[in-house]
Image (cartoon, rainbow, N blue to C red; front, top):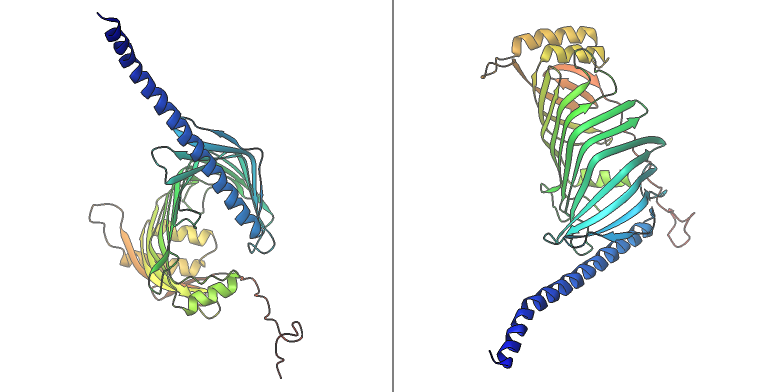
Length: 366
């Protein structure tokens, strides 16, 4: 074989190696760029939170994840509210917070708190930990995320009332900032499975709640007012409503499914009406009497009414009781029978509007 032909053959063998090296260099450049953008995005988010009055603290970030993802781990992460950011003091601490973006899913950010965590709310401390906790958010160029999904597995939480544990749970939030009246401004979907309580429930309910489900939406518009009381008033006056499409509970022998529509009354207290389906009615009434939610006389009347109104389930299961219910003036009623009165919601006192005595630039009241 001529020398020139052998030389060309060697160069052809080098071509695949050169392509591999070029692809590796290109991938590394893309990974470094994505890592830089992740860092810059988090720094911008931190600056915005601090400008709004929040405190954000963490240790030196560690970047990792190559080659299949971009991740940034921040040890000793703390997020703390200021005096004007939330109605009550709020502090969240985690041993570490990891932000991750997969190379094949560039438009999704996954935030994973790890290790021991602690939530302080209004002076109460709730230490907790989970085998897995992930918050998935869309990356939308610095805008407020339109949606978010939080998933947890094997959550253990200590509280002043005892220890809770949760086998599996998820919370999905979807918002629409431009919602008008009768359009959903916020959708909430919550599912909790196998929730262990610190102590057994009243009556025959037991210590473990098998299932909690919530599917609800808040109609718009939600006004951009920071003060909670004024925001609630503006939302109510604009025709805002809360649509509880489904609330389901399975706790021991009791199963409930509820749907309702409500809003706030003139005193900013909840009011509404809906439909309740109940299985295990006798056990549920017994539990309400044991918990002090229903007087014994009303409990006896409820048991008699339940026995008359319950219908057999089509599949041969427990009898089903269907009842309309109302909430007005903080009183809950089932059918024509009043049940109990809820405690009043205590809203923060809105600040007084400025007048000429406090601001000379404003006209006087006379």
